[in-house]
Amino acid sequence: MRFNEELPSKEELLDSPERFAIFITEKFCGDKWNGSLTDLDNVFFSDILRKISSNEINYRQLNEILMLLNQDTISSGYFEFIFEKEKISLCELLEGIKKIRGYFLLGFGNFRYPYKSFRNKSKSELSNILKKYCEKSENIIPRYQSRPDKMLEHEKIKKEDTWCLGYLSGAVLQKEGAELRKELEAAKKGESNYSNEELAEFGEYISKLEDKIIECQKIGLKNTDIYLTWDYIDVYVATSMRNKWEFEEIYEFLEKVFNNDKLLPLKLRYFDPTQSFCGNPKGKGLVEGLMLKRADCTIYLAQESDTMGKDSELASTLAQGKPVIVYVPDPNPEEYARKIRDCPLFYFKTRFLSLDANNRFDDPVVQKMLQKYGNNFENIIQDFLDTLGEYRQTQPYSLWFKKDLEFKETYTDFEKVCKILSEVECYHFDKRADTLRGKHPLAMQVELKTGVANGVLVVRNSEECAELLWNILTNDLEFDIELEEEEENAVGVKESYTILKEKISKSPYRVVAYQERLTNSFWNNFWRET
Image 1: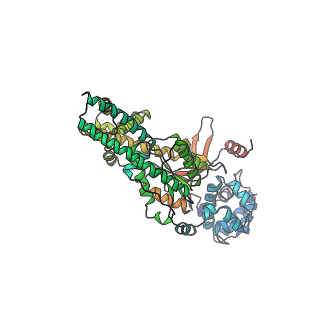
Image 2: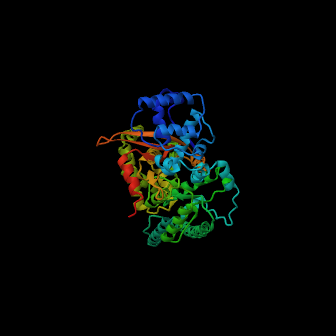
Image 3: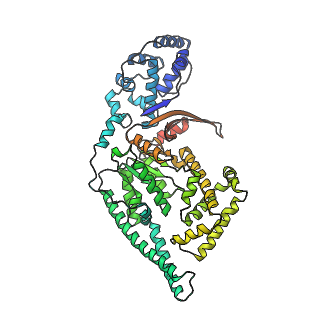
């Protein structure tokens, strides 16, 4: 683990005895500075600063400084754990303080409590207590690389077939199969809008699709059994997949992440929801709950919207004190427009209505963005939805992709519709990423065992996700420790927080609040038995 923090420079500390005293009290001891130095204290600290400006100090000399500040002293083991040597310069003091503050933020979400609790520990005791955060990557990586191969490997379902595992796919097939049978009866009476050849062709497709769903579900059930035999699971993937495009997007993303050259040597095992099937929702809930408990971390696919199941998996992971990587797509609008052109018509209806419900089209940024399509972009959208509604009255089969393709090719403004939706969708993704980086209620959850506030880590592409996953598993994360101060609230209180921000995701991972009443109430009531 690596930590960066903007602390006073060596020159700034040497220049001011009081600044040095405040620094040691607040940053090293985690205590609140409650006053100013007396004249005699100023003399003492001026002498100390002259000595340490060009000389190294050991733990006994640091203890003398702590005694002057009325702070509890430390053991030689505590000193050596932080600084990894017996004597240190002022610059090394600064670097060591960054490190221990980072460890305390990670493990305890607090500075004063761990200082008071661990100041007399030996080096080996501290190494054991903080092993989760201070173990070296070079010791961890060989453990992954030396793991045995799986006894059973799951059978891969093709990307274009993964949607057959969805619970809605069977329901849609059953509904449209029933509609088709009615249409065939109407055709016999000469009352159908379709030719016999068209109905026969679609009927053959429906029959093959029924066989394909049964085949894929059998493979998915077998894969689920294999997941249950695995001796360990490294990563759980939290997602919601109802529609064909969702299954395919997630399949593509997971292929990119777990086939990343950096991750392959770790022999990672992950629960892939695009390859698993359960016969009923109750069994599915139990399987996913088990995988969620066993995995070391979770990758949460934000997609276009949230669902209760997916959000509960995110919250559950954070409550266990495990990391959550949240992936929010960051597509190029032009490329995304070309991609969504191949999506089912249901996608366009669903996304336009959802974005409208989220007031995206009322956003001034969006309105300015869409001015290139004229002032009537809303009319373009509404005309498309009205025309699509009329089309669905005469062609109700969402699985009849050939007919839907004909609609796309004959609708004059379809390319423009794709571009409008793409631009708003990309903006929507950006806003979701910003929200999940700190404004969403789910972005920070309390670990139930420790009371530490645990935050999500937001990434925007597969490369960032793979890099961050590597850093999590090999203890190679890099953080910035930042002080965040807010404006005075409605009752005149100015709130401030120390944030531990992860470098790749730029996301708050831990937080310490400087609100005396909140802090006092939290730590008194969190552990109180009820």
